[in-house]
Length: 326
Image: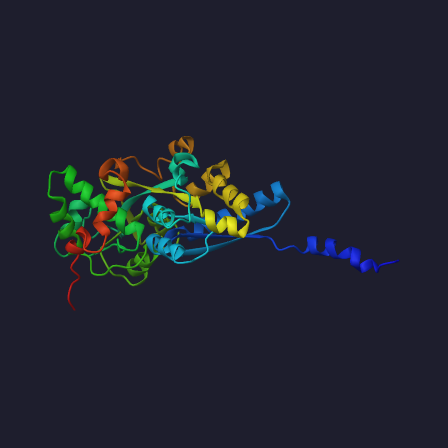
């Protein structure tokens, strides 16, 4: 019996038109530009190595808001956040393995940043260090620590500065937040308030975001003030195990994250103003990344499980922040 030749062509046609592997990277607010370029680089690498297509989709918002969205059902294959507590929240919900921090180098954080101050050109308020942010008649823009890792790091860095100076940390941070006229949900929302809406004398944000502003869309209009001390913001990443296994994307998701530590991945981190884990690259870029007194959340607060108690409902931050009445 003879069969139509078209029958034998079907598997070949299916192979040629097979849909590419698709990954969803759920990330935080100020990594949009970095991951746009990184995704293109990884896609080229993956195609060369695996000879198969891959498509990478992105989602961005405040880090803690994103973590909650994943817990509530946003089907991320990978998460790339700016604080351990957000990935731990997803792990506690049973979506990520408990050993996630040990599955990749550097506690699964391929790059870091610090909190700096962005001020208007000429620094008209003379803001030089944390103490200046608590002075009267100074408006400070900070993302909401309840929804943004950027905001949490800013709060914790201010607390740490006051403690090291021998001041009462809660009193100091309370005075600082009296100067905060609004709390944007995420880091990029805070940038919009400061840069586009012209609100505030200083923006507290990641060094990467401040450098992005002064080197691109805000060149010549703003300058960066690096305080005497800050907190090291480690940006962890993880495969979302349950989702990746359901989608059949574990291999691609794992390779996608591992490539962040590659030479190309680290170079792109520097290009987008993140502090690389590569010590050679860090040493070669001291003009971008000045040295200063830094502490990690683990060192200064005993880890995120302790630090995030400040931000729980009814916690210290709720007692500190009293929005100005209209």
